[in-house]
Image 1 (cartoon, rainbow, N blue to C red):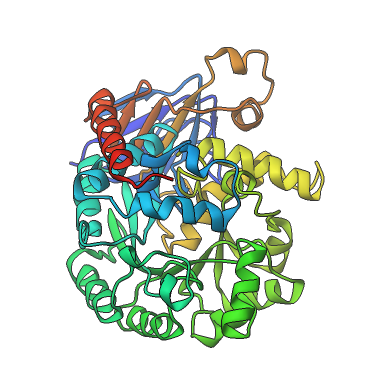
Image 2: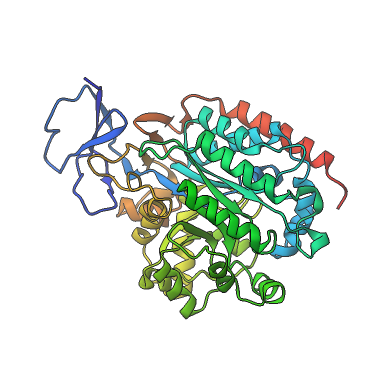
Length: 454
């Protein structure tokens, strides 16, 4: 018999679907076997118990937009206090010096941070390729496998550089045939469509100002052929809108539709600067959008219209975005930021802590096409996060679930991925975080030394 574990007596078990699991749940193998209502015990055999008293039990959090490599350039003086385009121009010369060791160290560190914050699934958007890292995604696959987190690794691309009127320097531009052939190779090598998959691949040209329309169309066709998702940045800043109108004669969403991307296969990062009509078109097309509140605030990009999108029927998830425009990889804090940002935009009574938690769990699962994740229910994957409220910040709380965000939780006590503990008592189970940090710091120092002066 597959060993079973009853996680019993949590302070709160929030299932994300209204189901009663006040007395916890039973994990069998990689899946949730049953929810246990208040006053009940499991209906069948269980081999072990886990005392969850004093903990808030949630579905594992789902991060739908990140740039792991950017953990290497946090709080970099040359990039401080700049809007998106100047910020990118200051960092591209640094990122052009990334190598395989740096990518591996950054992936390990980012996934460590995410796991420690209660995040069990992460989508990473890697779009910087050069002669030093022609196969960066292969390196990420190996690092993610070692960490044991679920990932959707997106094969990004940039083909429209400075000489052609784009933003990226020529050192990180790739020929489009290479981009397409590498994209197909990665799908064949690593994409796992199984519901229990730990690794999936998606295709992700960086943005409308860094690739050609031809590459966007060819990538959409390739994704259709292999049945994988599409991802890109869109609607992040007014500069992007101006660029699209100047270069393509269209607003960003019109351009996206013209190149065959306005489909249920696509999810967009940021999506701030959309009109009412564009939000309706996004909803009608089935396209999804990822909210990145901290990054949007740091770069002064604008207010995300989350409540309007929800009312229109848009699928919306949550992302921490790159650590160079967030300077952290913490999903529970990002849920708090989303709650505060939507309250500021719409009013205190229009967006609750429950809305933010749904964004960070089931919203992300829907966006990534992972119905087996994001909620606690029989048959779902046993991806769980347990947060202790035994900290000064929570002292005196009356509602444990609300306190999680209102009082600012920042670290999970226990985290499980597919029935396997990855975090116990606030620390990584299988890895030494000090060793991961030491390798990461060395990689960051090497990267900065190699970069040309600002």
